[in-house]
Length: 141
Length: 147
Image 1 (tube, rainbow over the protein chains, first blue to last red):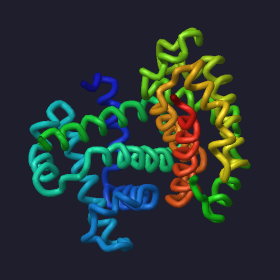
Image 2 (image 1 turned 90 degrees about the vertical axis):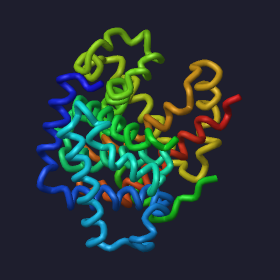
Image 3 (image 1 turned 60 degrees about the horizontal axis):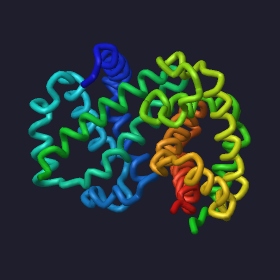
């Protein structure tokens, strides 16, 4: 699904995130909850106003999973199968929420990378994250 | 009708004052056409859209992006009255241009991303929330007269 060039773009962007999964993830979640408050409905365990520690912890977990996806762009289904099971059986996040997360992810990347967030990077990451979302919701029914 | 708080209005207006409409408009439309290539369907007359560099450098894309974002400036001035402000444009997009309103949401999202590249940390979560609320409201206003 991703071309060779797109995979390079995805890997290049990941290199900038790797090592900063917690802070990136925390900012991602903060933006998600601020811009799309309804998404907080899936995070009742974090409380109505999640604090920084909670955001960092959960953000790190999510970004580490993205890192797994980056390492296995050739075979997302196998690599993300346990997470797909989790989302289908336990979390059951409505699929309409994934584009909201992806939008916030792009904004985090854009605000950190600024002019270096080229249109090719944006296109490759949008395609990649959309593919991840498809795999995570594939077992829903 | 969408209600914007005083803080949201200040956030939007203050950032807008610093936006280079010509530059940002071209980037927003260019990125839309690259990241979501099916949106090129509305721009057959624009000439060369065959590659990322062709799109981002295309003078018609830049000109039209400027036009679209200039129109957005109207939204910033009339945040309390978007449906009336965009009534005519809504009819145009339905009756003449035949644009699926889903595209307005895609463009709105692109505006936030491009603003983030320009304003970086200043484009805080609250700033993003205000802008995404505005772009979503404009998208609704543009879809309002569809029939």
